[in-house]
Amino acid sequence: MQTKWRKSLLALSLTVAIAVTAAGCSSGNQNGQGTGTKEGTNDGTNDGQPKEVTLTIYGNGFGGSVTPGVQTDRVALEIKKKLNINISTEAKVNDDKLNTMMASGDLPDIIYAERRHMKQLIDGNLVIPLDGLIAEHGKNILEESPQRIEFSKKYLSNDTNDLFFIPLLAGDAPKEYTYASPGYMVRWDYYKELDYPQYNNWEDLLQILKQMQDKHPTNEKGEKVYAMAPLFEWGYSIQTEFYDRYRGKLLLDKFMDVDPETLEAKSAILEPDGSVWETARMYQKANALGLFDPDSFTMKYDNMLEKIKSNRLLFTWWNWAGVNEANDAFEKAGELKGWTPLPPAKGQTQYVGEYGSIGRLDSTFAISKNSKNPERAMELINYLVSHEGARLIMNGIEGVDWEVKDNVPMDTAERIEQSKADPDFGAKSGITKYYNWSGFSAGAIDPKFNVPTNYGNIISEQRLSKMNPIEQDYSKHYNVSYPGELIEKLVEQGEIKKNGTDYTQFAALPIVTPDNIKRIDGKIDEYIKRMVPKLILAKDDAEFNQIQTSMMKELASIDLQKSVDYWTGAYKKNKEIVTGN
Image 1 (cartoon, rainbow, N blue to C red):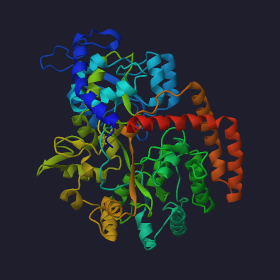
Image 2 (tube, rainbow, N blue to C red):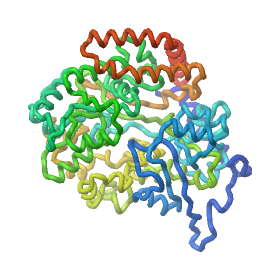
Image 3 (tube, helix red, strand yellow):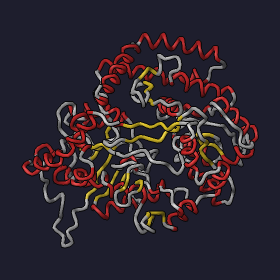
Image 4 (tube, rainbow, N blue to C red):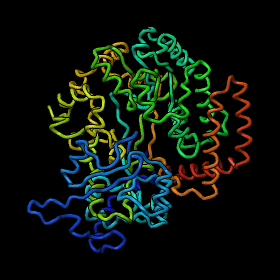
């Protein structure tokens, strides 16, 4: 979508590097800006190596839990080798921890910030302006993606026009080798056992899962098998967004269902078919069939991983949450068993991720006022946000994890064997572990090889020759060369569409929510979180409808309409700005 705003942004981006560089040359070291002390860049050793430092990064950079403290996987060690910087991070993060840090002023060196944090961070002088630092220590960002800087100063600065936040994960949506996150991930061997039954909607899929569960009620240890155990630890909105993604909508701010083509937004609560209710109905039907694991409401992420890896579940949305490890274990045992993503039913949409030339609105790096090494922190951000950094984050080390053959980067034989032999390969190697900290997304084009940055999405002869038995069986059944080609064919045939979040289309959404709306939204979030289990556990449609009616009355009493009016207006204004009309 070539809009006036985009054209303006691109024009401005051509001048920003010059302007920022000029500012940096004359700046001092006030408020963390400036040229930086040489302690931060060189310790005077003969080999010119900068002084070794340890920098802490706090924020939701990971899909799940990690070992806390200094990271020692080979990707982290390669970063240390290049920059002499150790990366330390928290094992698990949440808003309560960050709010406590912001209140006390006890902050890490680098903060992975989302929009809802930005006003408080800026108003409290908890993050420093980066204009001078980026001029001297951020040349990769200036050269490779200056549009991020202008975007951030315009939309992420709380109207100060200063640079506080560096957006991450810029790039286009890729054609994927396998569309499996999110995906209708099921046990392929069980699906095959049922002779590949067709399905047209969620109800059909539930019946298929019930047949699987009836045939396999327990695992090898005699433990109960459930069809699904959705993770509510991360909030109910995670579930509603998955529902939206398969019906051509997006769930972004505060339970609003958004059309990515028209940019119009409707309430996910007030609308009769809003995703808040339809998602709950989806799980209520699953529970009525005995498919829904009652642990879902209280289990943690690690519990879900264990359930998948111990063959106690039959359906999930994510291939990275235990599924890949389970598949590796099956392959290592020589069994034709494992998980694959079923294609969406006709008329549905396949989600392809988040993308955009300016990066994600809710994935940014900032340097805190407490950083004792702001120059080195900027150097680390500069590396992570570069094409070189993205190449390492997603693919590992050249010569160890990947190599170039016929001008195409591909996995080494050693990496392939290691990933098959070790179910913890990702955590130990660090490959894709830091994906959310990458400056470029998997679909961004790596200019060094003119291919997607995540080399796993390159459809090469080598990749096709290394398909595991389940992938081969899946591809043979659907008459395609590789699993992801099935989605491409269905899109070309007009049976399904692709759906994704182009953050460039939502650049003008507010980063600051008025206090009164924020209070209302908080009450709405807590109330829905408390009541959703009752909806899911309803014995029939009549009880579900009764609970829903009662909830709507309660939500009205806590000013739901004020929140809906605010967010509807915010999306309307966003559309006017980014489309120019």
